[in-house]
Amino acid sequence: MPSQETPYQDWQAEALWQALTPLLPGISIEVLARVDSTNTALLERVKNEARGGSPQPYGRRSHDMQPCLLVAEQQSHGRGRMGRAWLSSHGGSSLTFSLGLPMQVADWSGLSLAVGCAIADALEPVDQIPGPQAPRLMLKWPNDIWLDGRKLGGILIETVPAGSQRMVIIGVGLNIHELGGGAAPEPSPAAFSTGFAALQEFRPGIQAPEVLALIAPALARALNSFQNEGFAPWQAPYARRDLTLGRQVSAGSLHGISRGISATGELLVESPEQGLQPVSGGEVSLRFSGGSSGSGN
Image 1 (cartoon, rainbow, N blue to C red):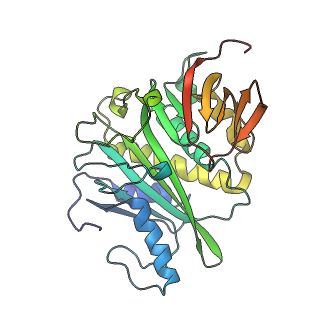
Image 2 (image 1 turned 120 degrees about the horizontal axis):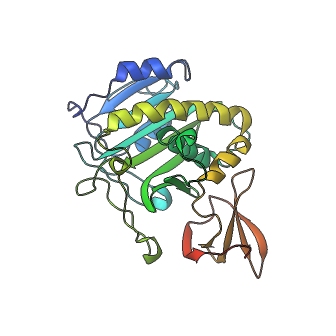
């Protein structure tokens, strides 16, 4: 349920609205102290419209299908990919938000990759990375953001029909400081027991509202780009941050070496038995199965 409590932090919503309005006309920004799930809250608005459009207990009416950025300082039933939990606590230890908007896209493939890349580039601009040095912020296909070899955050994208349109809900969760009371680790196999990272390790002292002010405009620009051009323009920027590239991976029953991402956002896995195989995001959850492959293997 949404909370009527006063948010803990100053989110500078007016300044953020001014930055986002030229990119997403008609956008509204809502900040809640507590909610079950920001993605669920926005999805319920769309579903409520299909049931007749009765007023919501907070925020705008459900029939208003304009873009909406919904921020929650605490999520009690946040959701990650494959039904996993992504929780956050009151007090700024994490940033959790969802952006909902109508989009007309011929091919949704690769959207989570473009979103991850846009967020990483906003926090660590490529032109500020010295020479051949690898970025500290890397992307693990299809929806995770990693910092220095540990998971920093994740992305959950859901779509739902809304009359003649389709609404996309993009949920983002990022750890801001140490996780003693922050985002709860998702259940994961031993191959992923690498610990969890916090953004303040990379940008000391930064707080959740500052992070949102950095990444929300970048996310809006990425969505506009994706709607017009699809994933192809993001293939090269993603490759620079591809955590799996050249590493042994397992994708369901397929085991092999990651050879990067296709122009439509598929993971390319090369195995001795099956050769080069594309893997779609909706089919499997990727796991590392070993170290790097070594040059030329």
